[in-house]
Length: 193
Figure 1 (cartoon, rainbow, N blue to C red):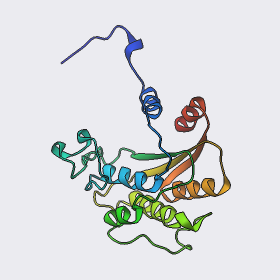
Figure 2: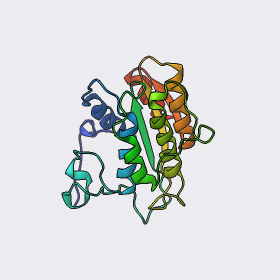
Figure 3: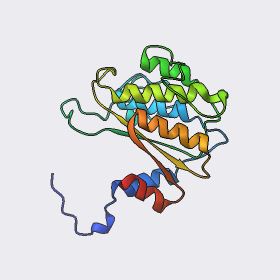
Figure 4: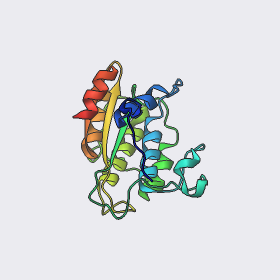
């Protein structure tokens, strides 16, 4: 099937599509960052669904039980990335421990020497689980599909030292980078690096 396109203005870049998706997000009063990140890694690895409501377009046969991985088994040289975007520190755990143990095959490590965290102990497990899952995703010998998935983090909003330190650590453990973005232009600049 061939199609000739004469009006290039109708084409969208991946950057344009990403920005449209970000703009369409609906925010509530909580930030379940850890749970959302772990669910994203489940999607990347083609694992079972943990979240209560999932778009059937990203699951096997439209059922809401197993994700369809976007990683092609025959193309192990491709780079695979997760960008965890947040407007602040997690304010809801949303069962991140249970979700993570289903991915890791064990409970999240609690050693602060392995996975340190900064700030409130209320969300210590969230930050430690995110680091453990980032480490797991980066290690083909640890995860189920034998692929490397790098994690980068992006912080929107007024920064605070603890959140920046934790997001930086998750990105470092995940083989990615930490970015700060307060506007569309800063987001584009960050993900274009």
